[in-house]
Length: 181
Length: 99
Image 1 (cartoon, each protein chain N blue to C red):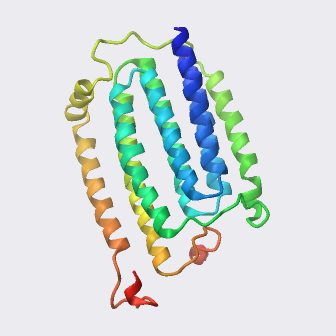
Image 2: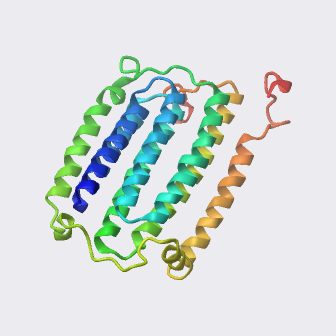
Image 3: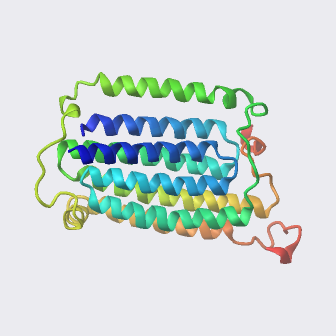
């Protein structure tokens, strides 16, 4: 019980620090690394909530594969230093933190004043197989079969879209230096 | 730990991400902040699923991860296309669609 609380606070502070790092750090490359730390801390929180399979998928798919994609693009585009440009970027840039703070206050009030009585408990009593790959797979292939297939189509169209976006457009409008890409 | 702790933590992460989307100007970092917001949503989904104990919320979280991956792929493709056409990598300078 005590161990669980310590783990929650360590992982929660890690997740918050990672999130702040993503927003505050100047170099986009360090922002990506900070997001990786944030995702790992979130995986620990998922484990605390008995979601083993989602935690494993988070580490393997998100912190592994998706972040590698980010690192490649940051290396290709070249992470230019980008300070928190408050002076140049107009009204929204200056009021952004204010909006975020107002949103936080509103959300916190909504959670604390909610009439969901079960929010202040540790949750329902769990069946033995809760959160295991077997149960998630069964749910995915039985109750959520249609969304599962729709997700596969979405992934296919995203892959096709990325290829179309990133290829060279010969004939439409010539690039300035053709051989450099 | 009570479920409400996790939900409040997810509210914090969501707001940090929202603030980042509004203040940062590099589209790469804006995409990273969107990831933060999606992950905060995932944490809330899994916390509420722990509250009910059914497993549906975990499947929802997996779908959110699928959609986040699609969004990242298309967004990064757009950024690479911008870079190839020598356009500025800055969301404030890319205002041709403003009308």
